[in-house]
Image: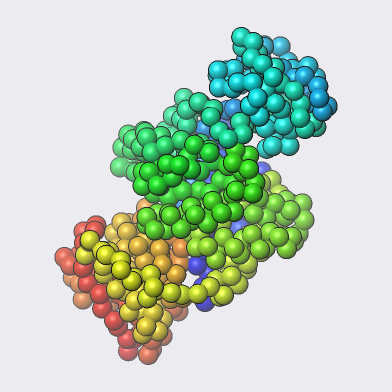
Length: 476
């Protein structure tokens, strides 16, 4: 059984050589993430070229996801690079401070903090490792008491427990970065810290305008990492093409214990709304320095797969870790083993479900037919990739092949669970298209004489959203 769950890997110093990146793609990477929190615009353009070339050498089209930095809610720099904070001491976060920080206080990148907090609020620094309680706010200075101390170094992040920071999701840097990302036509654009659907709609509008010279419209991914996003989750998902369960910042704002249940809820909601979902943060964290994952990490990845996530994501593990290729190999093996154990309940999925569109009904019919007939594969002839996306929202142990004449659609489908995208020329004659599709899968070694398969297409051919035909074929 081919692996259904996709792997997103972050590019960084450990994986930026052509040889390592090619090996990672061959090991199972489907989407490469470019982190816009680091590097200059030209660095990202060069890395996008690197990804395209490595994919070509590996014989696989991978998608590129540009991940915007979002608002910098961070402390400033220290004179000595870092300080040690002790429990009970006073520490001042001063938005007006220009000089480097010391053990008594530090400046802020985020100048609105004094207006966003009040006495009694809890601030979490450096991914929650340091905890401060707000004592009082005097002008631009937030006076705090250290509740949990430790080492605090330059530019560490600040979160407010329970959320409530007013920083906008899109900064002026993000707006420029969108233009850079469109210049190399990334397939996915990930927006950091959206609070509502409006943030995603604005990001989409900016991306579409920036992509107009290339007639390119990226798919939008909302990174769910603010507590304010949870009550309006459905609206954010509907305004996006997918979400990322960004467990790092989210855990700091809502508490670690709340995240596993939220993860399950987000994955289910995204799939129910026909959107893709990526599960991220610390999935194989120990493999930054170790050649094998912990048992807990294996369970974490497997559970995300069993929940139905489209993709699992690697961050520092592939960007800066010692074992980027081995990490991808381990993640692929875990995902495959988990998929073998999952239940297929298609009949229950379709009970009392209504389909308002012909193309969506055909997609569901193909799944049902292939499952009950024991087909070897499902072939979806699709211009936009929508038919393959709908099919991928349901668990089925029959691989789905998205056959498209559009390179952008092929790359976009790289993120869809259980979909293997293939490029196929466009044919105006339906019978010719069906014959060529079967031949393509036979040549690829997927189908052999005697195998049955389900195939969907639209007539007339070549119109997005026009899928209106389902056929069951048998290889002669």
